[in-house]
Length: 512
Image 1 (spheres, one colour):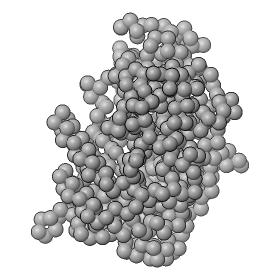
Image 2 (image 1 turned 45 degrees about the horizontal axis):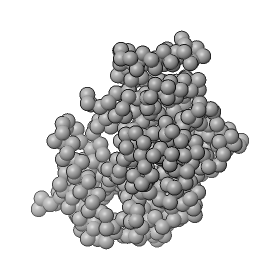
Image 3 (image 1 turned 90 degrees about the vertical axis):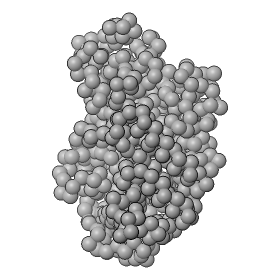
């Protein structure tokens, strides 16, 4: 073993109240289970290669003392610390660093305690969204939490970046419903909302993970939900001109949608083609409606008749059943699937985001279809997610997540591939960067905004050591707009030496 590894292991054993207990949750490259523990929560093949930097030590804490020891020992021996909840970070920053580092994997700290009477829940930082939803539904079928779709996403990273989801047009984001939390700061102290103060409480709720400390638990405010909701997922395989007309019209329809209706389109090149051999576009219109099917059909006929929604397209179910439906599990799958943390087969992936302020012209949509023709059918996907409703009513400074009033919808660009090697990587990364460049005239400007939970290092990165405010603001204002300045002030106050850092963490002014 190398010298730094021996030193940090000795430190962890010394600082832990029970050295025998902590020794069972420490993994080093010489442990037979090191690779399986590391790889279990890796969701992107780009960061699971032989060339990917690996941690000196993985700690899977069972209690707060284990985390405090990891923080203290990493500081003492000059190591970076990366905190992993579910492992879905788009750029792998929760488990990859280019300098010697330790991973604190919260997989063993995932208790969910629901208080139905007070409509709250305490959730440990290593729980997944699926576990949270399941535990809420165990106690009540008329309470919910507004967060994301993928059940294996960890609450720690999801809430730290804002947390969009299927009922955000009714209730806003996950961070809009965090009423307390517990964090271990750089000094090893356990702080709650009262002891940390409102500035740090504000910053943690959307300012990005691995910046202000290790959040060990979140207190959620649960929201009322009807006993029955209505869902649909209507797929249209269209000639390009028909796809253009339908999706162009959707942009105008969503401006009139009531807040009980969530709407998203998944768009990709179809494997089908016209009789003349021309590629076609496949668009899946996905919605959750907080009401019954009859009211939904009447409303859709009034606001978006072009979709041609009929009763046979719609299913009434409970909210908890809808979380399984939108996670794309087969119909009638048991709710227990929400508790399964095992990753699905992973491929190589790159994603980017944009925010649209006004409808994109038909010519721009036609340009997207042309670019989808450049890659294999199904490998590239765009998601258009409607904003509005409650999102328009919450001030952009209320949390670090600023993409509120004036946002028509969000675009997510994704490209996946299975081929290994540099040539394949260059091919697909180049494609998505060209598409992103093409879209510049049609999306938000000054700055061109992005969603921090779909992290994108193409937007800019910090220096390996300390970084300047000017350099960090290149990417920081895209994620946080004017909230970036307040985040820097908070970081300067609570972590002036910039211990908690990564390639896109908030820098303190004192770091340069």
